Length: 371
Image 1 (cartoon, one colour):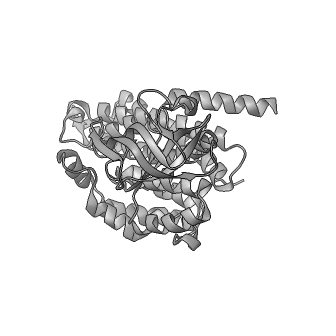
Image 2 (cartoon, rainbow, N blue to C red; image 1 turned 90 degrees about the vertical axis):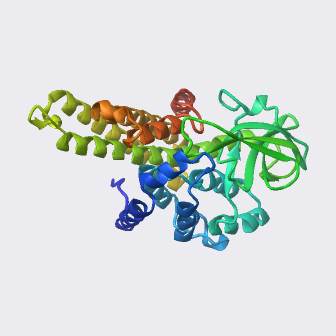
Image 3 (cartoon, rainbow, N blue to C red; image 1 turned 180 degrees about the vertical axis):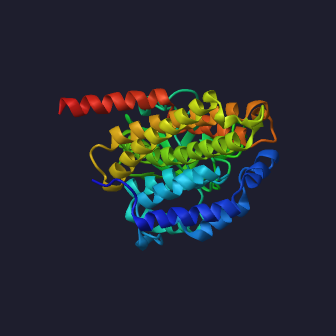
């Protein structure tokens, strides 16, 4: 069985890489990093919208390209490789996917075309502080028409025009669509290790909201959404990890010490080899996740957790060893290594830490073995 991408999907990846290599360089990333007034790169974001990537997995009847989740995985990998400082993941992986799996026909017809056009920038507000969000212990509430409570940190919450909020409703939890430019919403930027992907604290004080999906179904919808987003985030991590390996390899070939390239030293060879192995393990798991996501397979919870864990480990290791390979200069502000290390640390905890996904993987395997 061939789990590789098709020729058309590989062509899409190549074109995305060409575009991002020219229009989203580390210089663009540093523009956001060095300017505290910027939460994202507006120029890059405008071009991403114009490329139609936000509509990659959105059906044609809602203004999208109607391609599918495999194509979204391909683009996610290239976005991760480029460290794109834009709210693509929040809008495409979380917000749009939540609407696709739980929104009513009216909600999808109204909002999804605006996502494709860039008029709507979305985010997913589930966290209420340290720890994994537990639908059974939420303080944010929804009374059927209004939302009250505080969510922190919310990725791209300061940029977004709309949010999907996980809130308590009655004895259960629900997903709620909220216009962040409407009444009852206060947003405050939150500083993190990785300023090129912004975060915010969002306070809701009787903010008008529309339920997404059935009342009380928020817990199950939250888990389903995270499984889908986890695979896409894993591809972002895979793209970043592969770029770190390339950077380290290129430097090891070009940097001379004692009259020869440092890549000739056994210690450096071992670093690069271990980076390669971890990246290949991550790629195998990501492809498994992509298959499960694209076919809506019963194995998706297991595949999502496996891809997330492998990609988190690979990206963290590759970004760390990339710095080490560059030696003393690898730690400096001027060298790009730290840009990838920052993103690796952030993505490792977005949508749940490795500990959370290890527990998810164990639970998925236990259910599978008990069946």
